[in-house]
Length: 267
Image 1 (cartoon, one colour):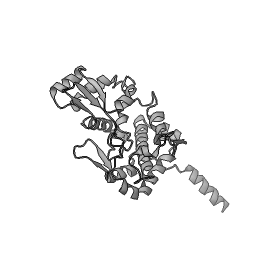
Image 2 (cartoon, helix red, strand yellow):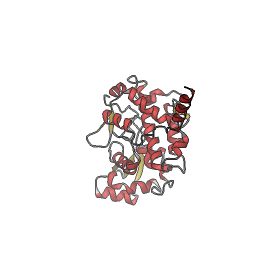
Image 3 (cartoon, helix red, strand yellow):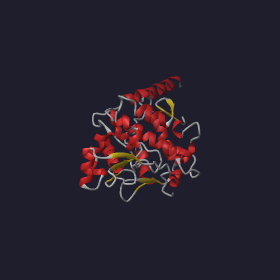
Image 4 (tube, helix red, strand yellow):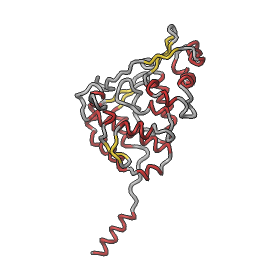
């Protein structure tokens, strides 16, 4: 019996842990089930009421994320690490909302005068107790790690003013295309970004105000806000004169108010 026990222990030690699912299949299924894209394709809403019925499936996925150790994470490719962090941020944001749903009109209701909902350390990731701010600013936006401004159109704060939560998980194999598509969809939403030809004003989301530094040379593909707007002039404006004005920099920038209402399908 002692020999059998020893063999069993040795076999368990020799058996590798299940590999992490980089397709994020469980999260992908939940998103496909509970996220609806608007008819114009520029925004989405979340059916939190039905999502709450799938809370255990969400919790199981979150446990998968929490089991990943720092050494394993560091061995992944850059794209796998970034997809992992984006999905983690979005999944835990949904989980945070579900904890108080339906008794809230905005994710900001979960904060207080002295603490924001994004600073709450309510989950474990990569061996540490984390907050959403830790994931976004400490891991994703850490200078030199990813330097990818398009993440601002991928991490979603459960609000109408945010970019759309995609009805699919981010995956390494399609990450660049997904980030580009998310950015273009957001820029094409006239409720959040538009060119006022009469006023000569480019009216854009507060995201560009809050995170201007991320578009200002950290990435080789984004050297400034002006260059970013010029590169995406075809999405930001409807007419050729307006697009030409954006490319030439002939405009002033106005930052629009941010809508913190919950991105709830039933609102």
